Length: 133
Image (tube, rainbow, N blue to C red; front, side, top):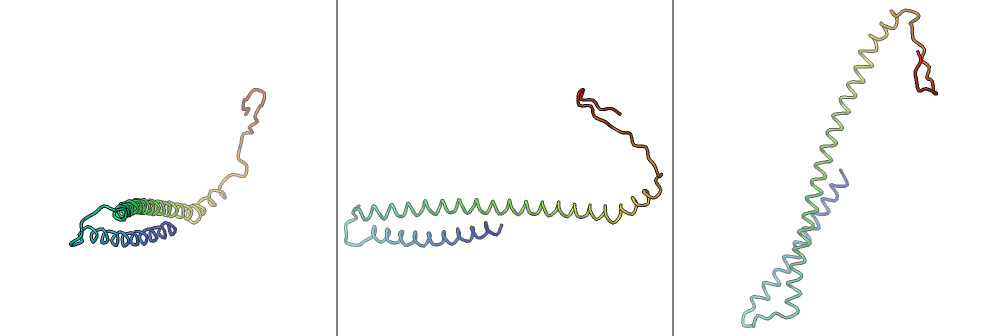
């Protein structure tokens, strides 16, 4: 969970950095398209600037997608952790009941039990796959 949270922090920082680069590129593009007294031309520099803006948009979209996946992973891990903690609490309670409460009752029954109890002997025949009593 800690590693995923670190990854989320890194993704958020990277997204913020990419958004800053996008803002600069969009400002340069806006300045270039609104130059007074200069004809609007589509030269290679303009094409590179447009490609840079599209590339930054795509990179930010990918990072946001990864961020959503990581946040979903954290939620899933937290639900799993909660479920495991709940199971552990139930098992601890069961062990407590068994060792503290039931053990005393078992000892009483063991003392009252007869000395010899009949247990049938069981043998297994390999040749016929039969159990003989």
